[in-house]
Length: 245
Ligand code: URA
Image 1: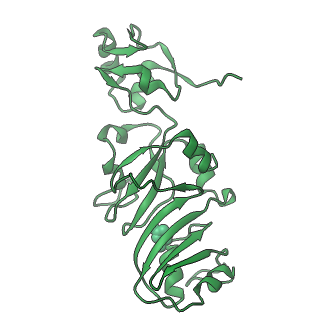
Image 2: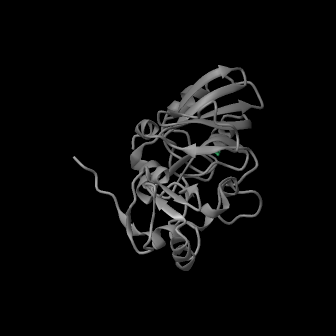
Image 3: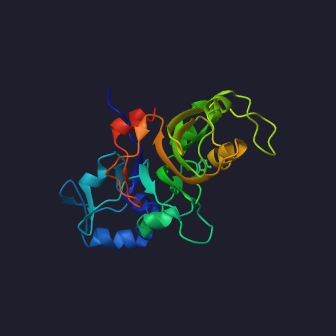
């Protein structure tokens, strides 16, 4: 069965992707600087099918097109950057090419990691994907590796799995979470919900303190070992399957 893709006027597509005004794009078309499948485009209002392989087929001033709308990125978030569009200080969006800031629809993080948490972060401009991954009904699991300030006592796995643990100033118990003890002060915790500072508050509730926190997995997708801190890449179709998409 053939898949139907959205179509959009070339000038609108490129303006929405942050390349410039529709007028800029008309000028590039006149200069024969936009090339699709090896042939210069002559019409700025030509309709273009937005296919996943478009970046490999369309060049602008000799450079491949940025990922077309519908992108999902994985980023290895370093400590010290904030998951926000507007807060002060270094933002995760500063790690992406500046042009991507002007995209419509905007690229957003799929949920958030604290400023002091590192690890696997997804970003997308696709509202449906965002909703599927963050909706409580989607049940997407997230795994965190916590380094603790004090040795584990031994009862934490049972407390976290109980489904009765209440966090301070909340009125609903946490869903059961799975704790794997890796060492006296290191553990992996898998959650299926995402409350504010949840991992740090869970360990605080059992008398400990998280000294360092890293997310290493979302659903069945691991943070790739070769994705260095501060770098990103597109999620492949195999990885989308691992995310349940
Ligand atoms: N729990 C936390 O405490 N921080 C995060 O960034 C994610 C989960």
